[in-house]
Image (cartoon, rainbow, N blue to C red; front, side, top):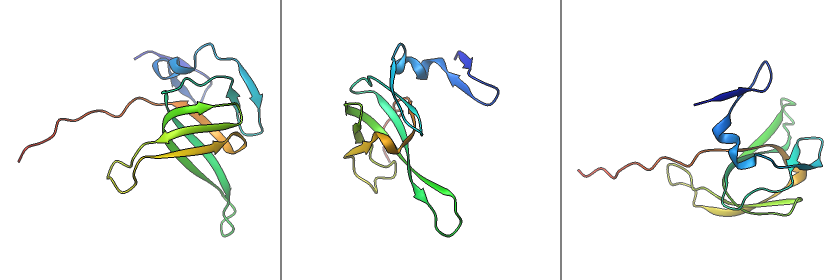
Length: 117
């Protein structure tokens, strides 16, 4: 897999960037520059800031992984994947753009054959 070196600390897979190639950023927030268009159906991970822990003073985050169903520049709507162990069902979530810290495409989950006992 080809890689592209962004800076001294990060390496980005070119294949993973393909969903966001040639997208002009339009919204500049304190947390991240967000794209103008996110393709419907793209599988992404979104990291959101949920606040600062009152006990240790560290920022706390929540990650959402799933497929984009809509993006209007202010609210990201996505079908969140169910958990791998089946405890959480798939659900529609709306994420406010102001809370987004990171947004990046991720590959589809691998499909494993069903084992027969």
